[in-house]
Amino acid sequence: MSGEEAFIGSIDQGTTSTRFIIYDRSASPIGSHQVEFTQFYPQSGWVEHDPMEILESVRVCIAKAVDKATAAGHNVDNGLKAIGLTNQRETTVVWSKSTGLPLYNAIVWMDVRTSSICRKLEKELPGGRTHFVATCGLPISTYFSAVKLLWLLENVDAVKEAVKKGDALFGTIDTWLIWNLTGGIDNGLHVTDMSNASRTMLMNLKTLDWDKSTLNTLGIAAELLPKIISNAEIIGNIGKGWPITGIPISGCLGDQHAAMVGQACRKGEAKSTYGTGAFILLNTGEEVIKSNHGLLSTLAYKLGPEAPTNYALEGSIAIAGAAVQWLRDSLGIIKSASEIEELALQVDSTGGVYFVPAFNGLFAPWWRDDARGVCIGITRFTNKSHIARAVLESMCFQVKDVLDSMNKDAGEKGEAKNAKGEFLLRVDGGATVNNLLMQIQADILGTPVIRPADIETTALGAACAAGLAVGIWTENEIFSSDEKMKKATTFHPALAEELRKNKVASWCKAVERTFDLADLSL
Image (cartoon, helix red, strand yellow):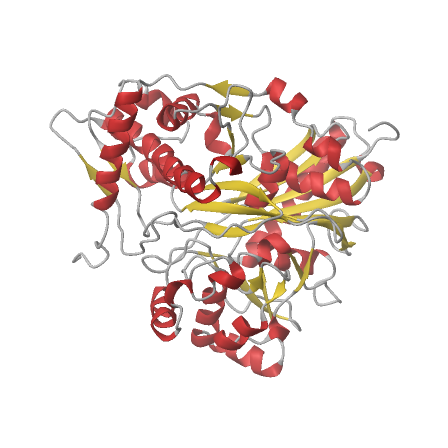
């Protein structure tokens, strides 16, 4: 890692905000900027973003981060070697090849407007909900891009017209950004990476290409789809009109896959990212493990066109940090998300209150889109501190549900243990600054939880992939975790085993109360 000054930039396009972070050779951030963008909720269960606003947020973040790093004395203009990109997955955009304008707002991963399309497919297809699992590893669900694309093809006239004329392009957010960054209507590159493609329901996990039989079954034209590439290769250079030009984009991963790289997760190691939702991935090496317990088989990463393909088991939780936002924005119990820790610390338990944030149904391992949120065990004794603590516990219980399923699917051999025989969960994401949350997580799991010094591992993972492709780092340097572990904070379980078991049983009872509530009268 010696030699001339060299920097890698990372675009981190999340569900509620966009960031651009510039890293030096030691993978330390030297400049960053973050911008929040608008969430649109046109109807109950619908969630949209404006793709043009997302583009503008990227533009602003790049310009401001470069200015900050330059002001701090770094020669970014000459030293920036490559850009990595990571993004919210599954969120779907269709735009016009000729005008470059979106034909509808982006339909966000958590949007459930496609539930009737999913029910229809489940009834019509011989394999029901699991019809495509053998090829793509995913059940039919509102979560994935294919059904969002079907909705756009069926319901938006502008999309129908553009498809007829051969003027429509489909992509997840990575595809939309790369197309625009590399020229847009002036020969922009229409590509996606394997991790994002693996979340559409349309990619074959074995061939790493679009599955023709799936496209035929769903009636989706291959011409709409981007070319699939690996996670670490030179894709193309940033074109004119951007704050930086001529720099290669050389790394691209969906946010959860980027976090796996940023956390240096090798085979048998797992990470949990706590953001709007929570996402737990266990690296299963070069083997696709089929889940019998409600998890998804997915791609972990492929760091180069000739590199080995690593697969993963994933459990996705729809509502994690979003429940804290709900306490803040909808109930007004807290004024800022950071206040929840102090409020929850005013009590030493939830007082028997259990909160299940099934706002739009439940994801893994339950997969119940008929579930709705419940808060049970409330008495006259219950106060807002108990509710706040129950919200934090709900995140941790959901993570435990997923890890228990992973253990059943991958078996004891599938999980790497430390010298003491403990399975270590690596954690990251904005919510992990909450020490109480991390301690509750260790207590509920009964195993240690490790928080890295830099919790923004998603942006770091994309930077690592980009730096690997242009020779700034080697794979060994990226995956050497000894140094990272020294700087990490470890939370050890402190809850009595009997109490832990009782709390888990009570949580399961609460989860069962959420089922079959979608048709409650207004």
